[in-house]
Length: 478
Image (cartoon, rainbow, N blue to C red):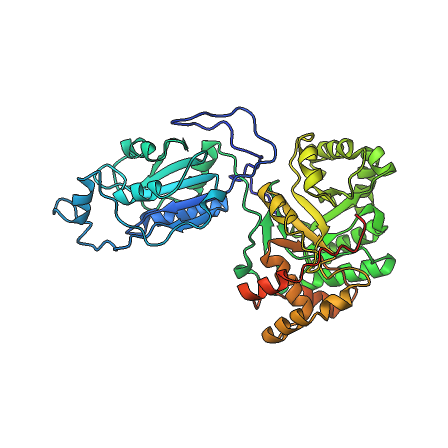
């Protein structure tokens, strides 16, 4: 998957800000992800265009500040004593806003956009700033105008959010390109982590799963193939079938004993022109015990067995007394370009905080047992808040339990209402929770079915019905 080097400079916290007020840190805070809100007011779509560029580059949430009483063309005419003239002449005016930002507390960085009216921000921006608590947040102003600079329109707003960190603003003209906006964001030296809790499901297509941006700067498909039960020719054949069916995420491990066969299937598919290597995302793992005790040898053995040029992600399979040592070894392989991202498997809240304080690269992913009977309702949002993607193994409940889960009365009822299978409902439920799923299968029809969940969506009520199925029923020891 392609790495975005231009903008998403991923670390765990803001640092090195060029601030107009407040403090600036010199060291990133491990474990803190930064979520972005792009809030803008636009009457003629000029500011909106810049805001959309910022949202695209930062993967933030776009929010339009909509006046309760819309501005007409006559309202905006300068020097006619119209509405805009009167409002700008009275600093106490606060035009009402229609709607509000949901859960503004979750955002760490707010890009704040507006047009220049008589050298200042429109008074509706004052309404917006006074409507929320921006304490501890970083605010990055930007404006649009035909000729005026940002001037004091930026600093005049600071008193309305005095406990925020204000970054020097920027003026853009109409038609500014996305690349120019990206260059500005990079110069700001604000380190951004994309929101990994929400996937772009609307743009997903059956047999072509969308991707999620990892905190490492690489994109990973949100649906894939788990290969735990695939061996020898079965592994070769069904990895090839999966690739031909549109699967682009493949999960394996040293302990599965199939890395060599999976590597062969991938190389053959690339040689045959079925897929390009960079279109695939391959995950493997090293196991506790002797592998983590001798991590350099173990990691290199995985790379040699796969023999696909590089590994997209290497995981530690379980916690172990040598897990930090093993992880730091993988970090060296990342520096060499042999591994692109690092993650963990079977890590939970009680383990993650202590672990990340001892390593240099933030884990990009945590892969755990998750299914409707074991939902990890505390773990999932906890990892998301750290900027860590969550991935479900056993998305259907695992060996010996899949049939019962697929036959669950609630899930079957929901499946019938959408004219899909129970398996598709469960996978869609995972994705709408922001959880990547890697179902295993050696059935070609099931593989294609599992990658085809983008033609329907579950309602809030249906999501709640499935959430109510949680039994905290874990089927494996780890």
